[in-house]
Image (cartoon, rainbow, N blue to C red):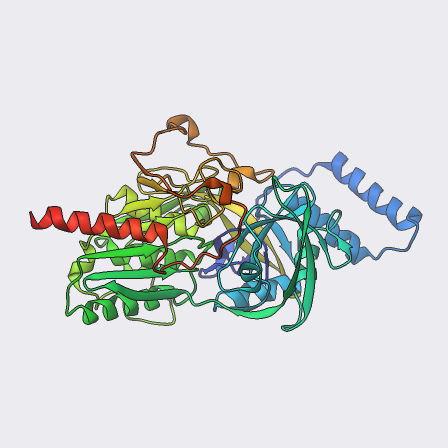
Amino acid sequence: MRLLEKVSLVSLGLVAGVSISMQYAAKAEMALVATTLPIEDLRAFTEVFGRIKSDYVEPVSDKKLITEAITGMLNGLDPHSAYLDAEAYKELNDTTHGEFGGLGIEVGMEDGLVKVISPIEDTPAFQAGIKSGDLIIKMDDTLVKGLSLNDAVSHMRGKAGSKIILTISRKNEPKLFTFTLTRAVIKVQSVKSKQIEPGYGYVRITQFQELTGENLATAIEALYKQNQGSLKGLVLDLRNDPGGLLTSAVGVSAAFLSKDKLVVYTEGRTEDAKMRLTATPQNYVRSSISSDYLSKLPDAVKSVPLIVLVNGGSASASEIVAGALQDHKRAIIMGTQTFGKGSVQTILPLGNNTGIKLTTARYYTPNGRSIQAKGIEPDILVEDPSSAVHDNGMLTLHEADLGRHLINDKVSEENPNAPIKKTIPSSESKDNANKFVPIEFGAKNDYQLNQAMNLLKGMQILKVR
């Protein structure tokens, strides 16, 4: 047996200058499972290895062959398992603190091409007009076909201020698009908040980082202070939030739930992969601090009318929060169906500052729902006319669209086509779906936010009556 540092991930996939988020756990002693080695298959592997070494047209180092073998082994499992070279491993650590270099796009691999899962707001990719579902076919003069995802991501990284030209294929568009992007040091502000109007607060979480829980508590305290100790309603915006630290997701949920309420549980083949995380400090307070940062919040935050906004870019940790608040009937979920990434990845160091990211568990909402390849269905479906996500799915990308995705092991127990309770349709024409308009979440013309405010005000009127 050997001692390994275990890291659990609840975010999307590899990122071109975007975070691969993680939860640091205590070092755990992992037992190596004794299995019978497939001798014949290993003999074939060594024979191929030897043939390449002796007959390939150019000399190939042992290190390259072994690295490529490991990469292929992991890539063949699912969209989220991967080999992390030294650069990717370093970026994984850097990004949990909210600052990293690159373009600002969450990406995955599909049919040998890089597929954009989501651009992050206020980044070069978002501002240039890159959309969810876009296929990157060329980077500068390098064709993507044939590259591994790690290689493609490495090519897109670079020194802040340097430029890269991306050639993109977009669904239902006959021509290719060319974008010239300037790499930047991306600083993601995890929590943004403001008073929309007296008595109504707005909190947006862009990513679940190390300090997200503390920042949320600070934002809520400020809103209550600004409103002299009371709020009529609160909007929690998780749109386009690709996920992040599991502890932060538990902390955000715990801010609105009663103590000891179940937030999420995980199931996997090993004992370490089986967890039940409740709204208790030991499940969200970082080991480096001793106090519960939620303890000073007003009691009213546990009962204030709450609406959670989600969309197809809300993934993983965002879905954990939305699912927990929905199952406990603590909030109304509004928007469009979420991404559907319901698996947990564990980082296992390999030495030399490299490691592997391995899918080790599925996670479930408190009521036992699996989010994997399905997502969270909103209580009230509200489409955003300014986004590319519409109910015809023309430009919507979800976990189920990725090759080799894990199946939903609960799908037989649920009705995958269950109708949404209520629908607030967009008044805009869907002919505008391909016309990119940067979505400024929280702005006056934010359609989904305006609908959330209308509902909160209606609830307040009914409460008064």
